[in-house]
Amino acid sequence: MANPTIAIVGRPNVGKSTIFNRIAGERISIVEDTPGVTRDRIYTTGEWLGREFSIIDTGGIDLSDEPFMDQIKHQAEIAIEEADVIIFVASGREGVTDADELVARILYRSKKPVILAVNKVDNPEMRNDIYEFYSLGLGDPLPISGSHGLGIGDVLDEAVKHFSSEIEEDDEDTIKFSLIGRPNVGKSSLINAILGEDRVIVSEIEGTTRDAIDTHFESEDGQKFLMIDTAGMRKRGKVYESTEKYSVMRAMRAIERSDIVLMVLNAEEGIREQDKKVAGYAHEAGRGIIIVVNKWDTVEKETNTMRDFEEEIREEFRYLDYAPIIFVSALTKQRLNKLPELIERVSMNQNLRIPSALLNDVVMDAIAINPTPTDKGKRLKVFYGTQVAIKPPTFVIFVNEEELMHFSYARFLENQIRKAFTFEGTPIKIIPRRRK
Image (cartoon, rainbow, N blue to C red; front, top):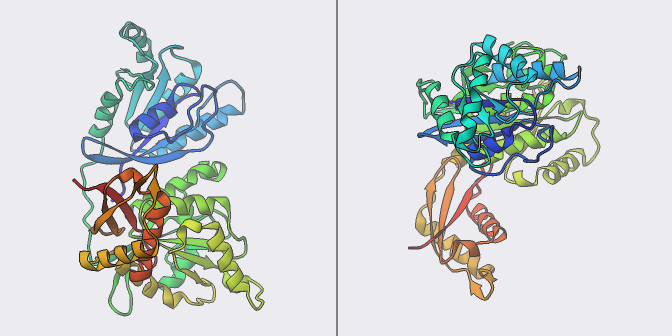
């Protein structure tokens, strides 16, 4: 089930990114006392009172120049479309501004739950200055201080009240996968070709399909699948044509619901920066990943064309060295019959459990090949390891000092585990933990 989504909106320099980082528990957004620093949407996950949620930090909206009128409308529409709850941030120092009033009117008409947070209320005396914010018509203003962390819990308490309590039932026998990628890479055509029917509209116009579409089907061997089409990562409204940076939100929800992600590339256009950004989200979420190069029939072939393209993918997606690559054509159905089998194989690797005895044999052999590092005269000691989770496979390695487990050595251990047990298509996690 996709997590509830909170969007943080407001004009520039009211402290949205500081609040975002407080909720996320880490410094993700760039925080700088200059309007317009946050130009891209930043996305992460958070947790409060046992409820996980997704959160978006948006760029500021301003009335200082006429072109910003469109930006105000776009930002508000994005929040309205994507968020389950909207945190509207204003500043207690400047009071209510024209930009605040305009956005408040748009959000009020949206019928979405809006929590009004008045930031920069850094001391009790300033609380008396927040009453003017009642004029925005969005209910009780909540005084907060993002820089000091005051009042953030009150805002999250209100947000959680608006989360749906419905639980999506999971069928453990069904493999859930999604197709993600930039508009016009051929995701809808791939879906039609896989299903052998015109399940979704196909068009050369980018972003034709507006809503995510779920499709159940079975392979010839009886394996059940749920295919989640992100449909160009876009939803209804022209805002997505003019604000491409926010289209990634479409993929985020699909990734959350998926076991495996098919990262679709356009063989004609090659690799773009947004491809790497979206694939990175899937990797960080611990989902299985398959790189699907579509429209391969349109590429003029030479002796090493496929090998050269694969080397380029490996160079651009270094963190996805475990992901299999398949070259297909939705038009000619080239190699499409291999996709269900490949998805099943990745799913099996995601669910693979390694007995502790076997795992420790591999770890000890790895240490014999490459002894543990030292830092300031102190050597890392590895006592034993055990697998603690699947999807993705997660291993806790018990050591004398967690700080001595350098990233590069954890990566070495991961590579040795992969050599022994493959884990094709799935990230694996190595967690060092001090033995008590």
